[in-house]
Image (cartoon, rainbow, N blue to C red):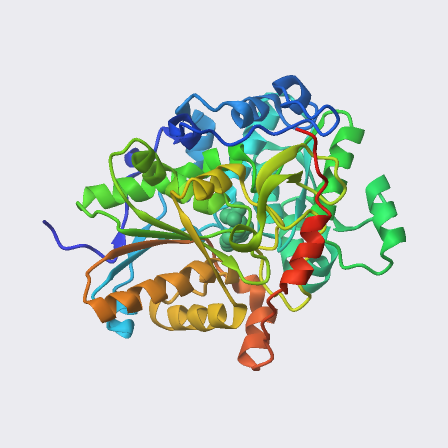
Length: 456
Ligand SMILES: *Cc1c(COP(=O)(O)O)cnc(C)c1O
């Protein structure tokens, strides 16, 4: 076998032709999303009022294993894909571990994250449908950036509701979006009914992702020719993100490498779901075994400490209900929480795979995450996003276990993006001012007790 290079590039011709829908291989499917009014599974018709029709179809299709990637999306992908799978030789040396560490790097585009993979698909389907534009929310700003890039490519109007605290703390993210022609509004705003209500109830609030989602949905429904798009959580997003896992699998296969451990950070579950889909598919079909680990912040521990139940996807309770691991739609991570990964719930596919025991989950605290980020940055040369660094932390932990046991495991993790816009958080860490906060059982119980009991 040939020597494994630092960067395993696939050829342009090896770019996947199809996205993979892992639900098709699940015997027990994720629970259907429900209309909050009727508590019946939503139909494509109902969803099409909020989402583009083609995306609504993808969202509800649990049997088609592969979806052709349209030519125009593939051509856009070719500008920045296939993304490299990097053998972290320098990190291995630094850790003095017998483990082989690989990371799939998704930060090589202006949005700085994997989110462009789904943004370009969602903008494409909106354009196909003849829409004027789309609305969305953004937290840390990566999704808004990715979507504004995709919309400018397809000449669509893009309206972004940006969580107020990020709007103020990340002015450069905002300017990237405006450079691509997006209209960016701090949320909660006075533009929407739900925004005005939240502003009245919580004067001076910094906003939250759940609240920005409600505003964006309301704005989409209120304007002719607009639909709402979302950058994570939804099954359609996991489908588009499967391109990450398919490329990873192809690159490993090219060198005859069998992954042992696969690690991804989990906010809404889209990068993790996309990375693991083809591997989870093999497990579901009984072809292979992998140790798959979802990593979440200890300050927002939906998988490790949440409950598996139907809940609202947003604070304003306008979205369909999803069965997922959730901390309650009113949950807000403590103010010292620095990075993303602050969503109260989790993708229903990732939730179901976790519930079936196919994957495991762990939580880590932010100071140890930033330590891992710096260790990585100093040897591998990439300044990682705080979100991605959750996966780095656990990859390092797993590699150190191999040092004790002498095992030469192949550890693969998703390096979802770069952290250039997160320097406030890095500054805090460098100044020794970063603290950890783990919510108490009482705090979580309070938020969880507010999840409505649906008669389903
Ligand atoms: C959004 C984001 C995440 C988390 O979102 P998922 O949907 O859980 O993947 C992780 N890393 C980066 C860099 C992101 O921008």
